[in-house]
Amino acid sequence: MEAAIALGSAGGKPAANIVDTITGLIEKSLVATDLSGNVVHYRLLSTTRAYALEKLTLSGEQASIALCHAAYFRDLARKAEVDWETVPASRWLQIYGRTIDDMRSAIDWALSAIEHHAIGFDIILATAPLWFQLSLMDEYRERLQGALDRLNQSADIDLQRKARLRIALGHAVWYALNDPDQMEDAFTRALAISEQIDDRSAQLQSLWGMWAVRRSRGQYRQALALATRYEAVAAAFGEPKFISLANRILSVNNHYLGHQDLARRLVEQVQSQAPQPVRSANNDFQLDRHVAMTSLMARISWLQGFPERAAASAREAIEAALETRHVLSLGYALCMAGCPVALWTGDLSEAKRCTDLLREYAARNGLYSTWGKCFEHIIRLQQGTEREALAANYIEARVDVSTISRLADLSAERLGAGLVADPWSEDALWSYPEVLRVDAELLLTKSTTGDKEAEAKLLRSLDISQSQSLLSFELRTAVDLARLWNRTGRRAKASSLLKSTYGKFTEGFATRDLSSASHLMAELA
Image (cartoon, rainbow, N blue to C red; front, side):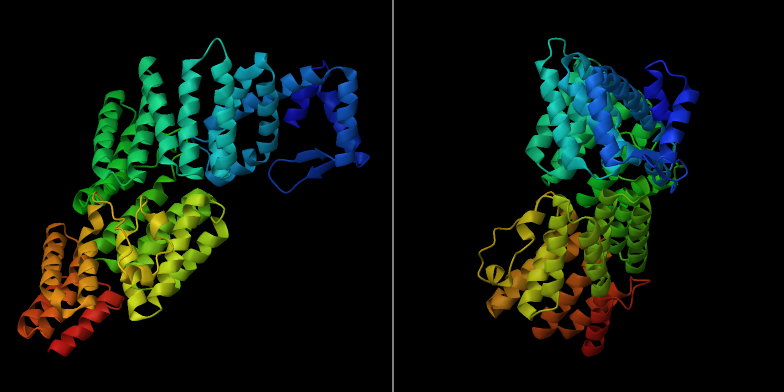
């Protein structure tokens, strides 16, 4: 009703008259009402709508009404952007989710009229949370590119708008295409502009994007340098939301670089902060903070030898993501925590549940559908022959943002024939002990002549696992070493190593790895 009054008032009609007119149309069944939400919505029936549009065109008032419509929804988009800072996501979507068609219409009209381009730019930028929450990133990417094309044709280029459009484009590419080259171009250009105009907020958003590019390529050392740079700029800026995001990206970075103790401290620091009045520091393209940090904590917990805590955190992240009704946050929780933790603990039923959720909710997203395909492939292989199970281990040890597309359909035959170029990123040190262990397994399956080389890899894996407090990887390596030593006449040494490692655990004794270790200890005794 507010929108109808705003547009009707542009023609000089009093608000009361407009309400009476709409009431009359409802009584004649020419306007439909929707009472399902807290706010009543009205809609013209399709035939009435077509007739009314034709009459509007004949009246010569279409352009003025279109301008009024665009201006109204620009203001509403700005209000939605402000409300997104404090209104719960589900409630916010109830209020603003249904405006997406009006926003589309207003953007298209404004960008088609050169004198009104600025209105279109402002709606596109202010509606960033709307496109993101509705998971319409591919469409948003196309509209952003169109807006930039229009802006570049303008004689008076607004650098602040240009920087923000490029930042939004970089995020849209990240979630729609996961194309590092396009992302890098968008964020690098945005950073140059934001530094030129001294826009500190845009600088930080651009730096986040450049960090994400390095992460997507598996270049975690370079990513850490950008995360540290981001932290310094955020500290100088003094905004708590940016400082919080700095800790978030540093926690992710340190996790992948193998610094799990530091990553855990950073996650705990972020989680201990009271909920902020703003959701993110990144033009609202950031994932839900609770989902992101709980997912990361699940990974760290398993690595450090707490499989039950890891499984609980993974479930918590998934449930929190389901409550947000945000496909991208759910995809993140499932791909980063749900599927990996279920596979690590040997809970194939939970892994299947997670891949089913991915297929149900995130199948249309190119990035997450590839992850889902890879995890489904691992599950199939784990339930197959010994050779296929080894291929599953090979893939599982190397799964990363930068390698996922090359691992999604790797066959046991290709691996056994030695036709696979190692897709592991040398910067992804978090899984290096497991990479070494699986490589040793491959050597041992080929011939007994590889015993010495395999043992060297296992000892190296054990040493790194212990130095990085990766107790779960340490146990897997200890089991393999114990089997090798037992086979080569070093039974007492094998038993001693396995008992020592197993004794460090305080939970998860029913999980696959601990159960396997327990059975082996009984055999060695």
